[in-house]
Length: 334
Image 1 (cartoon, one colour):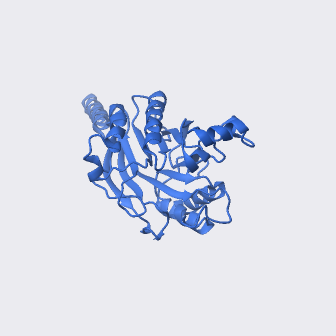
Image 2 (cartoon, rainbow, N blue to C red):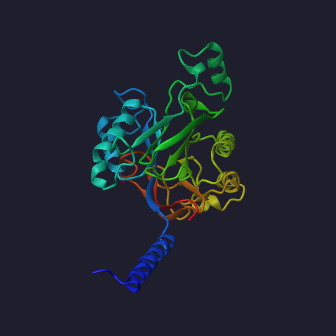
Image 3 (spheres, rainbow, N blue to C red):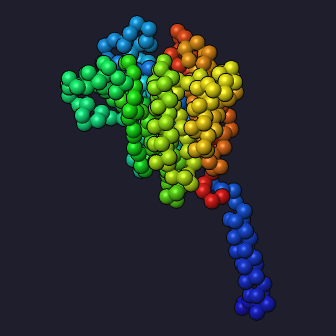
């Protein structure tokens, strides 16, 4: 039986209404957003060799500790690490994270099916390879010119694909800190899958000089300049690291103190300190020296916390506590 003209007209009207409803639903659908688990952790693998600690006060330089750190960090999405000079221990942390990743229930964002990508650095500059020259030894002994003999002191492990990266070695360092490539890493991370090219986040990781505030001041100036040069202004950004700057409530009260000087550099760049309500992260949990800063309306902090991963100062995975946060990352233009 043939459908009548009126029946065909009513059917066409229903199809049109459904199509319009579909367009409205798409327009009103919530923007794509991901929850990101982020962590900053100084893991204290400062000895480039495998057979002993750098000093008796350091934590064990062992594969077991590296593997346990990796298993503990496996469910995070962005992991900033400091004191990863030991290449083998760094690889063991990554291997343990990969092995434990399946239990986290987070799908791979990489074509190869692996869970993580690693970026380590800064690497040794060409002039630092081989035995140091007499001039380099003299400069190290008489000034604050670095004489790096080890590298890859900081690292980033990420579930998000790295689409661009760079690093910078600070121009001043002192004491044992001057024997490694003290500096900052930059990575641009993309959401992955079919996300637009501008659906990315800038991540910076650093570790500043211990004990000498005047050296840190110059390093912070270099850090701010590096961020300005490398970061796309329209992209959200994270800055993580062991700053060796006390951000405890008491330290923040001093308008001329080191924390306020740090924020006078970072606040104009749009960064906000997520840890204002947190406790200490040093070995005695007194000074808050590890940080997560964020900028950009596309990033929203859901929580921030200190993770000791054991009992400091003697029975934890490292001599620092970690700083962790859960972030909501919205797609651009939403």
